[in-house]
Image 1: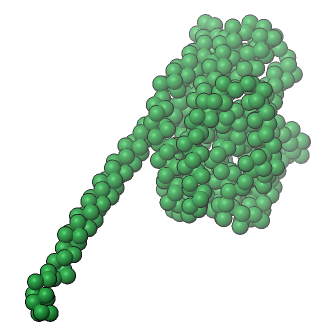
Image 2: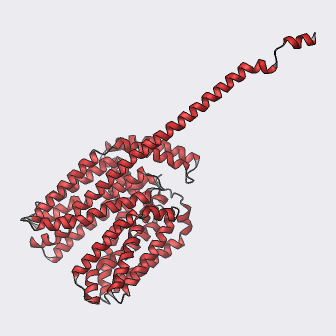
Length: 485
């Protein structure tokens, strides 16, 4: 009977056959779904990369037009205000007024762009700057000239907001490369603008025509910003947030929080745009307090010291060359234009340089600052004009790379969540340098024509010492949490 039962009973494998077959079918379906999801993810990533690439190239054009328009007018302003009958003292006071307004407005406008969103803040800054240059084109008195500088002094932060937008859009690894190219595109505009402005000045009422053309360029820039593919920017930003999940900088919980923040940032910006102005001001002040109470003082101090050192190098450049080597100011102008052109090339070379350093921004900044200090020392002790040309050649590379790396280090350590605020504070720090450098240069020139660059060497050495002292902090790349977060 047992043999009969065994003969009549189906084998165990046969009994499990339908279930096993069904299981295999389900596994195959799951594998097909995973492969389809991976293919779809790769396709989405490819489309997203192309979208953000188009957006970044449009921002390069925004930076180019901004400095092209500004550099058409700025070299002619001193001549114009003197033709209106202003004394040297009045002209200096009005020039300082612009720097003081930039000093206080940079942080506020940058923080405001974090609150209301990049699109509306960028449009507001461009349009109000266009208004300022339009008023400059109608300035027939010193008073109107001073009034025209007010909207430009407060809202001329197009480049800072554009850099914050680029920081939102690209990954941390690609940020130095993109920032370098953006600076290169802007520098091309700054090189071409004075040539066009100088030609237009030869015409009748040339300054007024140049100012109106500058205002029209800003209006064109506003139209370009309005027509930017902002939906593509959102897609690229989401891909940027997903790309950051694969890095070692964030934990799994931090990735989840970051995804949640990226999903709500757009809605928060739209809601903040329609908030009461008093609420917006309170939020701005709270964020600024968070930056002031954070552990970022050393980075901003390094930026201040290196900015003043470079400004001291250029402060009496033409006069020092004439006194030391007997060359004409025209030669100094050619040499500065040559350095600006090399700066554009340096911005384009940031990609290979960052790969060579394995994307270690701290090391690039330390080495570029050391090279800058050495080259300024070489210029201060130069015995022939050829040594000056040699130092200017390599200084164009080291300063361009250093400026880009200090911004990247600010955003890396401070975090991308307040990129507009961080860039605004950094711009304010640079404005402090522009105010302090002429005073220090004047005092140093009382002793020697080589006094300003020699003082710059000392300040650069202090900056290098600070970077070496805080090496562990820079290399850890840990985000410094702000007090209000």
